[in-house]
Length: 415
Image 1 (cartoon, rainbow, N blue to C red):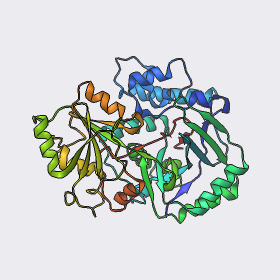
Image 2 (cartoon, rainbow, N blue to C red):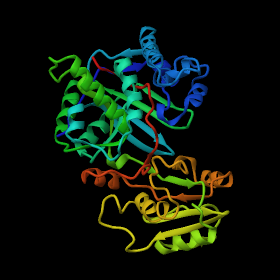
Image 3 (cartoon, helix red, strand yellow):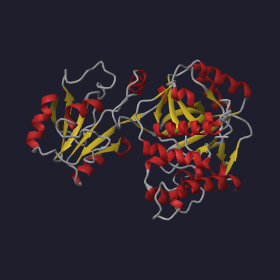
Image 4 (cartoon, rainbow, N blue to C red):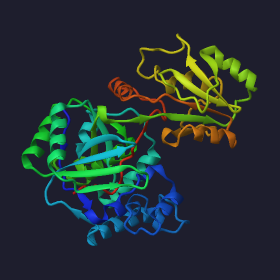
């Protein structure tokens, strides 16, 4: 049983939404964030990347940075840039990228269900990254960015959402600078709101698609508030965190590719010989880059040539939810034993390229100093759910979701 409840969203005025909405905080660095917000004092980057408003000499994790986030959020509300709804509601958030549509419900989910694994995870989190969002959420007294969740589709929930879209006008409808369309509807009918909550009661599990650090941070802020309020009832807003919840059939996972800076002391010939022990290897002679068309196939770019690699039978456990993943196959049979990438989370000789950048980016990186690149077949949503259901953890950088959820469209106060 999954608890999803409505909330009094704090949202941009309709005429300001395009100025407010920003890319999520974790897809850019400080300099990029500053450039994106340049000349736009209403960008939500002033809340989620508030270091852009302090001197560059100040560490991005300094207390003054988080105090600036709170000051900026309060000013947005005081100036009427953001306005809070008068009663709890659900919101429909639709994104369209390259003609492809994904439509989710925005509501609040339970920190207890995160802890008891009703909300399932598939990634480890890093304490330093958690601490950053803990400080942001705690100082702002709000969830300033949503968690990206999924669930196995429910036809009645889909019907409610589709009917609402059909018969009601959106409150926001704009296309961002990256050519992604964002459309939002507000569900304010009390009977629909109640029914949505009842239907989620019948959903066994929710799954984190993207936002493991944000969700872990939200939970820890909630637990901190419980300590500060020992007589809490469990109904307070800090017991819940803001999420956008998509049916599994809507989601689009892109490839997440790899580049490595050297061959770990191997000559080109030695490297190719070792690769052939676990992979069938053939040179790709067609135009352009090699994009894998099936699971267990990989592209490899080396010395201005593309190769097709196919994992040999018996080199991986096809029945294991993690070891059968392409990211694990490449790591266990090539990156670690041949190239010496023991821990891809910490090894500085490897980098990861999201599929949104295209395979040309792999060629560019190799041609500009890296040595070898690998194109991957995208992980599927079924893979993700299978790993989470097994209580396992996916290899690092296994999934790249597009489009990203915009920040600033919704804020959830913790009181």
